[in-house]
Image (cartoon, rainbow, N blue to C red; front, top):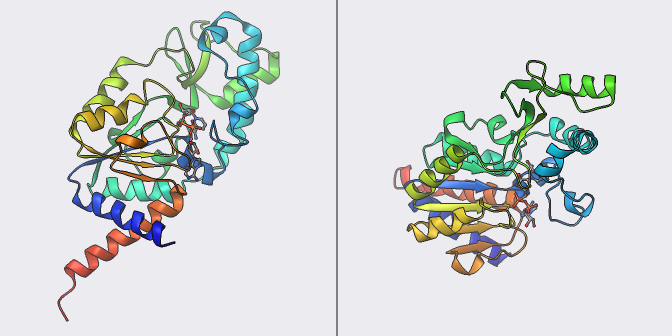
Amino acid sequence: MAGAANEIEKLAELVEQAKSLVAFTGAGISTECGIPDFRSPGGLWTRYKPIEYSEFLASPDIRLEAWRRYFRLHETMRGAKPGRGHQAVAHWVETGKAAHVITQNIDNLHQESGVPKEKLIELHGNGTFARCLACSTRHELDWVREELERQARAPACRLCGGIVKTATISFGQPMPETVMAEAHGATEACDLFLAIGSSLRVYPAATLPLLARRWGAKLVIINNESTDFDEMADLVINRDIGETLSAASLSLANHFRSKTSPAA
Ligand code: NAD
């Protein structure tokens, strides 16, 4: 445990010294909330081959299958509450330590933990609602579910008849340029970049830690397993996210108390 304590101290020190950090999160921050990630044992990829965007567009049967799968995942997502990792990140945002949270997650848990909209960059969209791909009209998931049950096919937009899809970015779907530009801006402006719970294998999101390092920020990677970026990081912590971030927050609070309490 001495190793863990040292790593947590080092993390707390880096966070304390940072003027403006970015928390970049992946599916690993939400596993303790009961939402499976992609690549861990038992993760979503061990069960399903992902449906590519082009397949979704091309076939009504694949759209129906995509929606059925999505609602199975959504059952776990909608009961989930933010975990210790989300809470630590939200606290750093609230206290002004973190300028932005950039997330690959679609589960809405950073919002639920209190991170305001203007501080959150959702690279892969949000899975709590749907949009028409043609006219962008928002559709609620309850309506999509009712339509699926009623007619056993993927619903079309109520306004224009276009294809309705979760408001997320699928494999093979172009990333919105404005979102990527915001993520680049936030990465360029930070002096500490925390990559939390991501295998760093999904591109272009995975270029961000590299850019952060290149643009002069310190890089910390917190993940159960190693990543291709470990060698360039200032600190790598291969431990549980909830435990690590809650312990680092506590350590920071203790530093702060010992600095501000009157000398005995
Ligand atoms: P990933 O599944 O590729 O990687 C998650 C990483 O987190 C793994 O390396 C795993 O070892 C690690 N991990 C899991 N639980 C952990 C824990 N408690 N402590 C420490 N490490 C832990 O996920 P990714 O890199 O985010 O990329 C997958 C893509 O899938 C993203 O684009 C994301 O949009 C999507 N996705 C999102 C959710 C979600 O919204 N919660 C869930 C699954 C997939």
